[in-house]
Length: 122
Image (cartoon, rainbow, N blue to C red; front, side, top):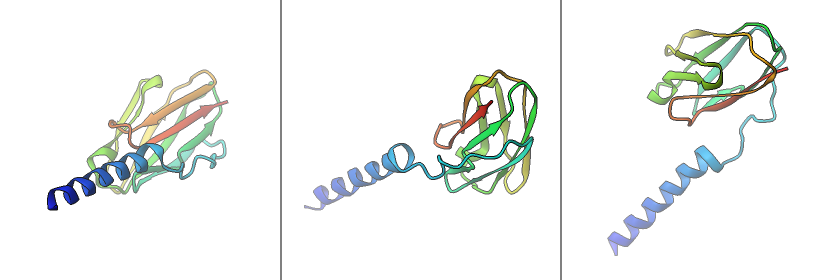
């Protein structure tokens, strides 16, 4: 009986993790940032806040990532389509330079793709 209970609890925990990181509600997907060059993004509690950023296309920009989450997953931010990555210092701002790019949507994430966001260049 105890083995069955342990297995049920294990399956429920796995489903909770899957729901939290991939199927759960989008915590701030409706929030879009105003167009600005020096935007601060908070890295905390498994999310980027804001996770939807709008900037003008065709110019460089600087994003200020402030990492408050000590988990190893939050240590890096990657913009794969822009070939940009940065190691984020804990409890400090890290400046991330975004190069000139064409209009479009550019996803960004941590190295394990658990933290996710989108940069929209317009």
